[in-house]
Image (cartoon, rainbow, N blue to C red; front, side, top):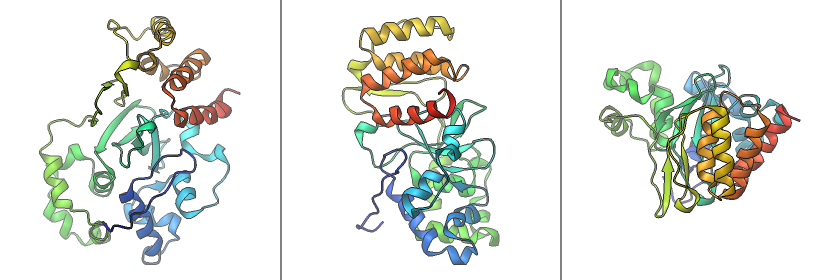
Length: 287
């Protein structure tokens, strides 16, 4: 990549948009004519199945999108750590960055496919480059079945190959990485004195160690999780509270007590990104 990296802010969610995805947006803007589509449709044309999210269109292209009622991330029960950048067009299914801890101000994030009806993420890359390859050529856990040489030589894939070359993405390198992986869970680089706990949605909770308490394994019973989360918040262990709450939110997404406790957990963690997202979501569904 060039040194003059594209630095953008997602207006809706206020995070750093990864540089490689910025190059992708710049590429489809400059080459939209060859796809016989305006820039906001060029990605769907080259990827064959995906729409860019309204917030991405607005943050990069100054696209005049409908009001926030239109945003799919607010119309479906999409976890508040996910920032969708592309949609499949099927019931809110989306490709997203996981922003566990916006206060770390990362330039890249793990990438996942999320189906609101499965209630669990599917890993598609450690970063946006890997995610772009996955979206164009298939999910990583299927790559052992792929004849990569045939894919590269296929005439129907030449626009995709041209796109990857323009982004300096080496498909052969990622092919080797994907086929040699033993698991396809989300893995993080955990900062010193931080801790990560897995959750049933595959996203998990990342926070400073001081925000986790030592609690016994718990059931997914809603009453016991609510009691544990209240205790954790009173003891100022918001990360543990969030672990408990995430285990019951998917089955009861409109439970006002769960939402209020999640909001308190994010407040104690100082995560305005998730708080602002929750406020929009609550305006849509609960107020």
